[in-house]
Amino acid sequence: MRKLPAAAQEERRRQVIGLRQAGLTYGAIAAQVGLTQTGVFDICKRYAERGAAGLKTGQRGPD
Image 1 (tube, rainbow, N blue to C red):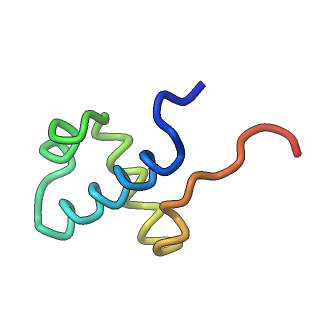
Image 2: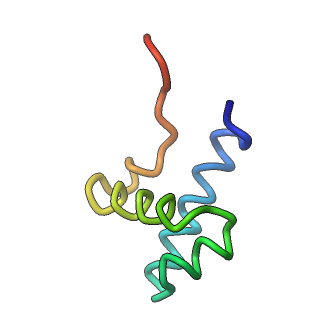
């Protein structure tokens, strides 16, 4: 179960991208927003691959 609503997750992802574009390291971003470095890296990778669509919360589980 996710701890944050989808809108809050997407806002945090936008914050991660903004901090990365400002030049912060993955570790510094992780400490600031409460994620792991791997989580920050994954968000940045999805953004690089899919743009803003990569920040949207996806559906989990079978349809």
